[in-house]
Image (cartoon, rainbow, N blue to C red; front, side, top):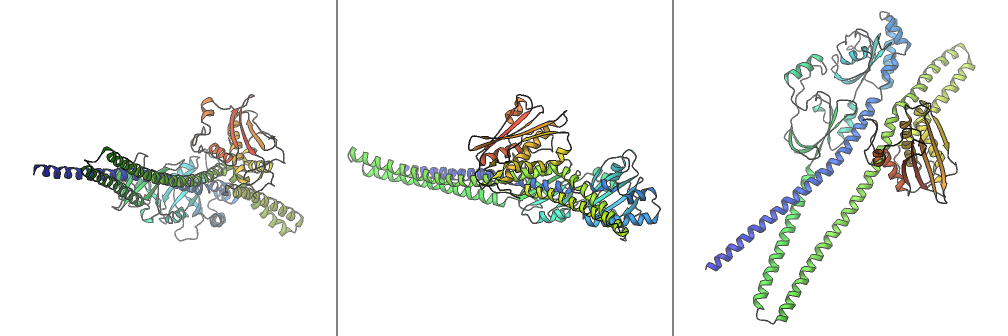
Length: 615
């Protein structure tokens, strides 16, 4: 009786231990899978945030030049000289209305030195800004102090939110007026609303100014104190909006710095933030974690099931071993040895089957990881192109503004010459206009080709033509420096490489050389190419700058390492360039030239095919 009770107790203890092991395996599988899935989702979220960040920064920078050019217009200057002249006011109103319609802005207006609106693009509306006193607005105070103003607020006349750009008119030390451009940013929300995630843009006060859900606009991320509300109310920045707080509860802080939050008592979301460069604004991305939880639960169930199966097999094998031992205790040693051998074969077979399943799973995971890595590399290459275009945007805008201004002047003069009957001068002006249009077309065509996403297929690129296209993209920077540029490239050299990607590499290398020689006397850049044997070509870009330090030379090709100031580089240019050349069987090395300065040398296989121009 006692022996039977002890046996029952042993079985009960074994069952409890087995349940504990199954539960522990399930919990471990859940935790491991959840953390890994959250990390992967966080990486995708950071890429999405960077894309939103670049789009927003590009949108804000599109109209930076517009307030500054208003001070150059004769009609605006005439208005500020005699603001009581009704004819000049009417001319300025019509001009601003036409400019506002063509540029696609929300409103354009001009203020005098005391903050009174003298002319506005919405002069014909009943709620026009005309005659209003806006001297209390921060963007006016910044511009009248001689600086460019940047401000987000809600209009006090129409209650319409917008982003304000302002610039002083006349001498910056004593401006005679202020030009203001008001932009609407709501078009960005339309793109955000199409995404599965939720996006918000908060300003320096923690107030949401753009959101994928319009209900959140002019809400706060945190509850504002009485002092903060009083300060905001006095500035009229949000036109006395109630600014309610969003019900956003923190659930868990992650090691990556991200957070798990709960929005309005809904499901758990992954919260990620990214500061907008050059401003106190920040983007907030909220992505659902339902898939993470389901994947973690599946892993937990799988781990628990496998553990239970393993324990069941172990118990079954143990029971079978006991029964065989009890039945065959009296048999000879040879039979016992045969039984032992059979048991080992069974165990080894089970181990081999498990190892085979694990190997298949690892192979499948490796294939998925390689595909994901290839997609990520392609996205990084495109991000590198967009980063280079973003760095060149100021110069390109300048290159386009000059022909635009010239087109306006020439077209106006041509009308006058035609009215006078001076057809020869009018024909000359039209020919000049045609040349300016062709120049603008070359600039935009080069940017379109450079920004195009290309594949990894094998193609051919003429080295001299690729260099010429790269120098054309950097033409604004080259003209802005008293630079000695030496080129020695055989026009017959053709590389086995995609032309667009080769141009991206050359733009990165030449842009780095321009950065190295900026601010030095007698800057010089040498670009030389030569054939190495029968199947390889080499191109070297050398500058006469300060060269590399020991620490910098060691870390040159590390991702996200850069010696440039914050906001002027992602630290991906050299890494992506080396990756592009490696994909086509080439290489990129850097060293200090014996005669001073830095030198980058790329090698690529020669191509026997005709070069693809990619234009």
